[in-house]
Amino acid sequence: MKLFGDERDWFFHSRLGMFVHWGLYALPAWHEQLLWRGSMKRADYEPLMHSFNPTAYDPDTWLDLCESAHMDSVVFTAKHHDGFCMYDTAYSDYKITNTPYGRDVLDMLANACARRNVKLGIYYSLPDWHHKNYPNQGRHHEMFGPRPGDEPDEERYLEYVRNQVVELCTRYGTIWQFFWDVNVAGFDDPSINETLRRLHPQMVINDRGPGPGDYDTPERKLPESMSYSRPTQACQSLGRQSWGYREREDYYTVRFMMESIARTLCLGGNYLLNVGPCADGSIAEPYKKAFAAIGDWYARVGEAFRDTLPASHLLQSSPSGGSWVMKDEALMTRRGNTLYACLCAPPQTCGFSLRPLTVRPSRITLLNDGREIDGSVELIPWLWTEKPYLHLFNLPVEEFASEVMVVRMEMDDAVI
Ligand code: GLC
Image 1 (cartoon, rainbow, N blue to C red):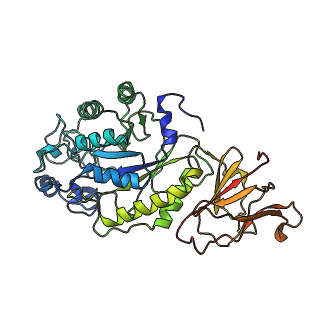
Image 2: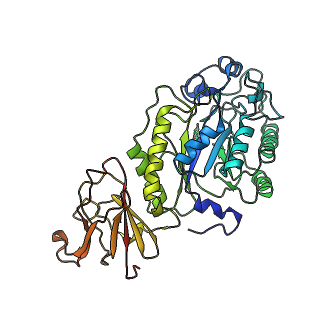
């Protein structure tokens, strides 16, 4: 994949990041789109701001979570679809500093990020269910048409957006990433991104805004192709139902998350994993446990993803599950002649023939625990008319059933 070739290239080395969805919606703890999916009335939702008092908020505990999972960036919801501003904007009264808490939570987070060398990014929703000028027309992620008192006016709304994004990019130190969300209205004003680029030449801007962005943002889906053609950061929440904190959340298993992360990273994409803090600012136990488990795994296998290139094209998988590696069972990365095979899908067998590789590695190591793995180049009975291929065997698949296993193969001879 082509690099940007400028200050934005940090993006290709920052493989894991933490997404944070936090706002008034953490109080009812149902879903961040309660006003839309839950048909809650604006008159009932907006007064939640008078009860928002996150006394347990401490950005350092958030960054502890982030670092526990080996993440080096955080993207924060400065304004979600509800229009509530989680920072001290000069352009709206519907904001965090007018809650009983009264403090600018983004400012606190930005200071902690600067102190701890974590890259801060901003999430900003284009749909706005509060601002009277947003042209709500009942499209997806919109209110069902303007409500009493609204004055739909695209130009005035965009003026509000321009003012806010400049505020966000001038008041909180270095902003590394700008994450626009759902441009349902089809706003087209590339000058906004150009302004942001002038303010922060190192900033990467996503593909959901009012102008061309730098990177793609596949959401909640496992990649289907063997590599990404554009810079990519996939995003996924630990909860299947919601991004904001949800009381009865269906959390994904850690094995599923590892698979989703490994598949994305093997294809050359980055990964943004979401946490939804509670209304009081604390982080619920399931997030802490999952982030720690992912971090523990990543500490052992992460070298397969650091400064490596996607290499799954070196493998031919068996489409129907034959006698060699099955379709999508293993994906590969490489650094020179060191290859890494990630057993993404739960393995069906304790061995794999890595067709069409014919080079025997000088050393084969299971990164999960550092043990050596057996391997040889041998004829496979099912492919007896073909050549001998590299065969890994006796893998401790039962022992590592709850993890994605990653095998490092150091080759003496060049692998083309
Ligand atoms: C979707 C959702 C939104 C969430 C976002 C994260 O656009 O509408 O609630 O913030 O995905 O990427």
